[in-house]
Image (cartoon, rainbow, N blue to C red; front, side):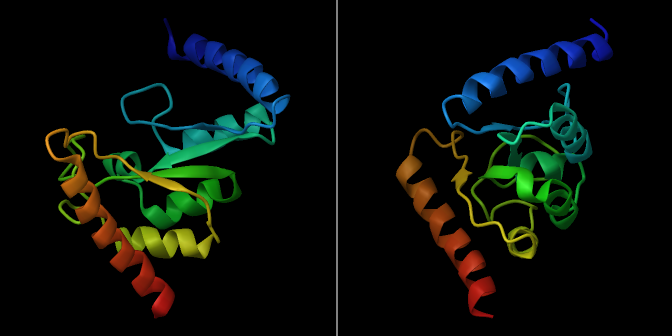
Length: 156
């Protein structure tokens, strides 16, 4: 199927989903991912505008933005008030394999500043599904690292 047809079907599905969700006071956040139909923040921003539903926005995965070569501040500013949730994981190079934050190439201080710059106060999820043998240890390392990064921004 051609991308244009796929995008039209996606929009049709989103219209149905957000209408159903709105009747139940639920927001719908979509996540873009390199290699899929919606690959970059700009493409998601366009889709959000075209759908035009108050309850349709972004689930921003900073690992995906890193893979797409996007700067955190650019992504945050582009999606700003439509960021409903964030995903955090680290990435080494351009390989889509989730690492514990602080163990890869992503600059979490940039992410912290970018989120502060748009006034984001929502929730986030640290994605650590690549650590099934010792999830508690991975979660503790991620928490300690991210607490230090985000609290240092607040204290400074």
